Image (cartoon, rainbow, N blue to C red; front, side):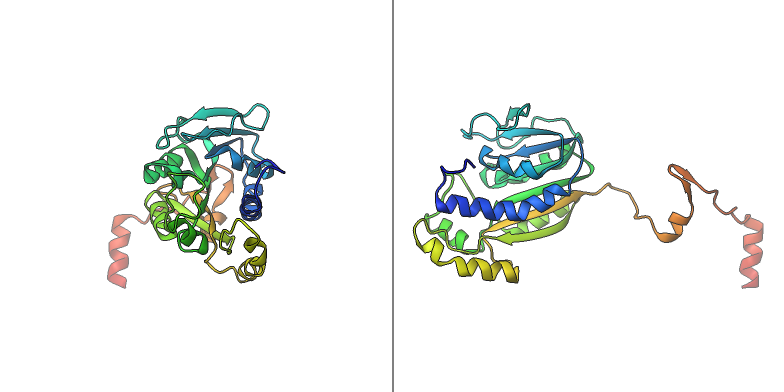
Length: 250
């Protein structure tokens, strides 16, 4: 968002998103990051150490060129992501699922372009919140086609796609008043932040793409590693004849 041009509500929402997302982005390293969503949230990438971000714009995004020098900009139809498979260390879906005509397909596309052990960051509004109530009443509509998704549905989709949920954080506990009411409800924001109750209007999820078939390295297996990429020889197998005699002795 551009400082000085946003309403107090827009700024409060942006502050809550930044507070939740920045620490997560700072912990993600790699070469390539794909940001999918409206350009107004690109400021979150200032906290990312990833060197080569790509902005994938959704239909109707009139944010213009990306603010980062040298950032590639691509257009999407809202359902697919025109990028290579397993080529990105991190993917950020910034309110992209809420704006997509097929959010499950778009999430599947995000999983496709993630490399094994890559990270997915989801930033979205929550239906089960005061902000969600305002949206249902037609009093909060950042976009005409925005549809809020239930957090449990997102968790189920992540699990189906082999994306392990690592963390879920909430923010913006107030009703999205556009006037002085927003400032009067600041106490509710402080209370919600301290309690970390799952009632905030903004939800930020971090997930990781697990590699199918991989087994966590146990202490015993770690002791068998002689050097990176080398394993100590396993114990010799017991011949069948000795194994039969051993069973008789038992």
